[in-house]
Figure 1 (cartoon, rainbow, N blue to C red):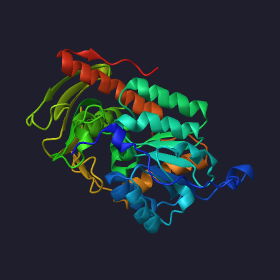
Figure 2 (cartoon, one colour):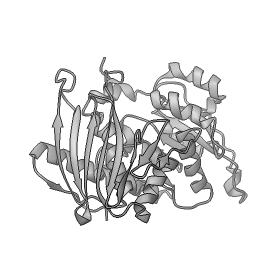
Figure 3 (cartoon, rainbow, N blue to C red):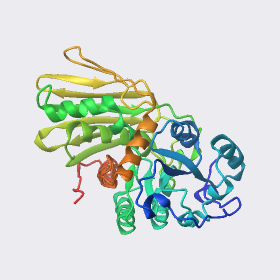
Figure 4 (spheres, rainbow, N blue to C red):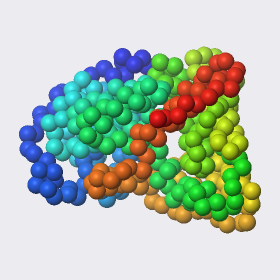
Length: 364
C-alpha cells in the first residue's frame, strides 16, 4: 500500500480545548524544571524511541501529541497521561500557540513535511526540534531557519549521534590531532529495506537511501574532520528496480575537503552496513557500529577501546537540547548544521544525475 502526502496529513480527531493560563516559568522569571514536548507524528520512531526516551529525560517531558491517526490517540493518552487539551491534528496544530503546557514541537514526519510543520511550530511561538534530514533541500532549510529566527525560537536538528559520547571522543581526536593529521575518511550506513514504511519509496515524500541513511555518513564525515566539503562525486545503483523505481536504493559519494582530504561514503537500502573509520598520519580510529540506537563501540590503531555506555541516546539528545533552551545558550546541533548537510545532498543528487563532479556552495 502506498500512502500519498494528502492521505498522510488528513486532519483527524476533535479540536483541543485550550488553556488560557500563562506560562509561569517565563512570566514570573522562574526557570521551569522541565520543558513540555509535543511529538508531531506518531510513527515508528516516535513510538519505539522518542516516546520511551522522554520517560527517561530530566529536563523535558512528553505533554502533547499531533497526529493524523485518531485511532492512535487513546493508547498514547493512556501510556503517557496526555490530557485531551494537548491532543492536536495537522489541521489545528496552529492552536498550540495558546497552550502553555507545550514549549517544544518535535517534528517526526516524512521528510517532505519537515519544512511545513517546522515553520508552523515556529509561527506558534514554540521551539522546534526537527528530525534529520532537516528538509528536502537547502532552500527549505533556509526557510525553516528564517522562520525560527523571526519568531525568536530555538531550532535543533535530531542528529542524536553528535550527542553520543563515543562520537564526541572521535570528534575530539580529530580536533586535537591525537593520531596526527586526518588523511581520509571511510564511512557507510544502511539496512536492508523491505517496504515496511512505503513513503520511503516515494520521491515526493523524500524517500530513498540518501535522505534516510545517507545523511549519517555525510554528517559523520563533516563532524569527524571538522571541515566542510567543497565538492562531491556521486552515483546511484539499483538492485531491485521493481521496488526502487522513484528513489535511490544505493548511493556512493566521495566528498572532497580542504587540504586534499577525501571521504569515501556509501549508503544503502540493500544491505546492513554501519562503519566510520578515520585514517591519519599516525594511525587510525573507527566506530563500528557508529550510528545504531545502542552498542556504539570503537577501537584505534594502538588498541585503545572506545566504548562509553549510556542509557539512551534519544534521552541524552533531548536533555541536551532542553538544557540549551532553559539556559538560553546555543544548541549543539542548530539549523545551520542541517543546512550544511542539505547543501551537500543537493550536490550529491546533481552529481549522480550528471555523472560529473559538483562543487558544494558554502552555507554563508
